[in-house]
Amino acid sequence: MGRYVTGDFEYKFMFGVQPSSDIEMFGGCELDTNNINWAWNEKDLPVIKEALKELNKKMKEKTNHTFSYWTKRLNGKGYTRASNDDETHTDKWDTMLLLYSRIELGKIIYAAIQEQGDVYVEAEC
Image (cartoon, rainbow, N blue to C red; front, side, top):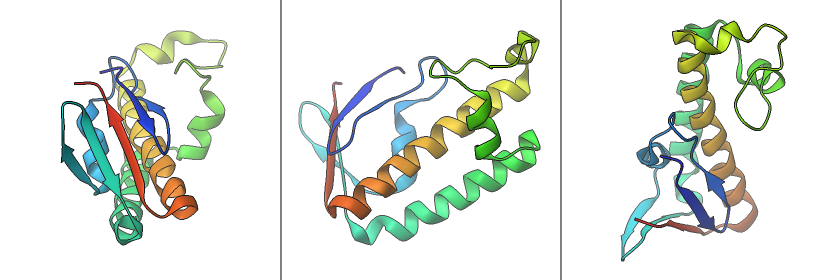
């Protein structure tokens, strides 16, 4: 966890929250090298779109709020902007962070494919 991904887009998995395997939710294929590598192309867009739809639905069900709502509540470190920090120590908050990080990753992958077509990224093992 906390692994950096570089290549056609850059991403850092949320440390202590998001497993590196989350990237596999969005199709693509893992390539066989000394690093962990993934590749996608336009054929993967329907898989990603469906995964994002399911994740957004699950976020709404589990937290009673949307990705957009939580985006407004978070800063770059994953903490609340609210004056009362007690909400960050709840199961709901932990669930939200995991779902939020997955949706964010899916959106980044989707946008990279739309912009570039073929997308390739790697991370250290």
